[in-house]
Length: 100
Image (cartoon, rainbow, N blue to C red; front, top):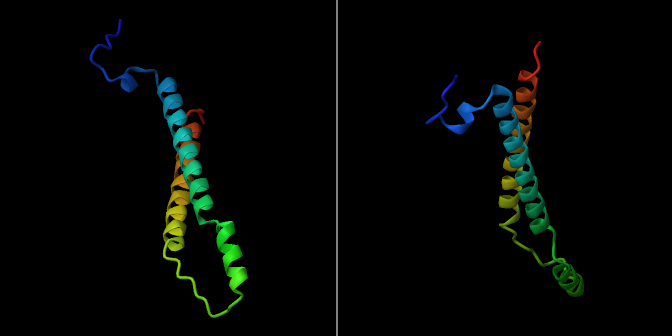
């Protein structure tokens, strides 16, 4: 009989159970990243009030300096890359569960 006392929970599980736990955690991380990306997209959308203000002014001499959008775009690109890598890790994990 095996004694798992004092063994970390993940190490004490069967390989399939731990793989399923890891896959569930990867899916959870992917979902959280997608939520963050949606929040960033929403923050980058112009406010309706600012569009009305610009239309009312009707001048082409107005320049709006936006130092926030590049940071949001950079953050979004980093999250997108992270999501892709987590998806790749999830795919590799699921492939490792199938005997070849």
